[in-house]
Length: 175
Image 1 (tube, one colour):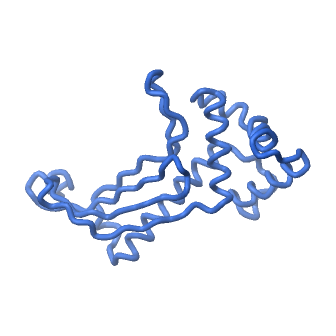
Image 2 (cartoon, rainbow, N blue to C red):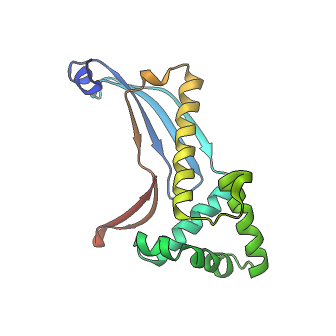
Image 3 (cartoon, helix red, strand yellow):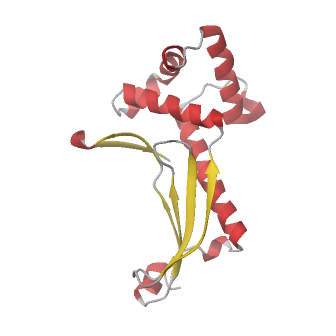
């Protein structure tokens, strides 16, 4: 079979989906484009937006807080995630410790569903949920436009930027 890249080199067009979730953390945008790799053929076939639910916005803000606290060190961010999200709720949102416990239970149910059994909120769970939301939007866009997933040649997925310090050559992107 001929690869998408080979088809594009032969002047044939390909379908690509680009995803963007910016630092505003308000949601995800997706666009389906047809291109042969030249500026002459670049056709927008459609686009879609998925606003983040309020719960997920807060979960992303928690993750960003922890990753920034540890200056992009993911090992430390994961190791101290639980105590750091409590610090976020208390210091950044002025939530009392009793209310923060209830809030964390609600967030766990949001992330894991009813089977949460008080599972702790982890950085990995937030990353996985973000990835699932991006995948959901891709499938929604394809379905709305009447395409089959086998027709899509490439998906560009940047992920969610949480920490960026170019001078230190550190950039943490979730997804």
